[in-house]
Image (cartoon, rainbow, N blue to C red; front, side, top):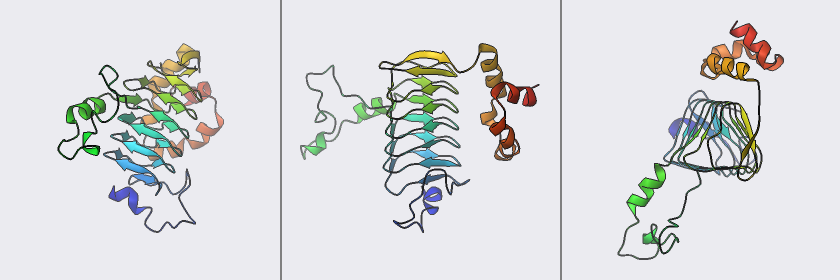
Length: 224
């Protein structure tokens, strides 16, 4: 965590980092109140106030807002994660006689027993995957072993239990598709263009067009 904590060395309580500011090509800007364990961060990433990140990877340009709780997840490039979301929430052993965490956090209760390493290894292996440029709305929950496709939108408060196709909007509990963001041809063209793989300089060069052009016009200009 050395690279991304360096950005916060001179940050006092009156100048806590705010989302979208002072991002770094060297790694993540992580709010001092966030909890991060066994996770890695690529350039231009950000972790908001009070977030908790466990066993996860943030690919370049992805971010989460305040109080996001993310575990065992690969967060794709340019992922947009709103506040108070829960991604990859861990499960209890509900098929056993008891489901309380004394089964696996046993050292909390007895001095002569260790925590259950097999349980934690199995939990960590159940990966959630967020595709590039997806948008996870406020308060949404995405269950373990779910994949959110590129450009998809998960509505606020949704509970996602199944994979979401690229550029699809889902909502509800359990979440169901509402509609696609674009027609099938435009989606295919966006997937082929894969602008989310462009380097930093190319993104900057196209910034005006990202801002001003609708998707079809953008594709016409950059894909032909």
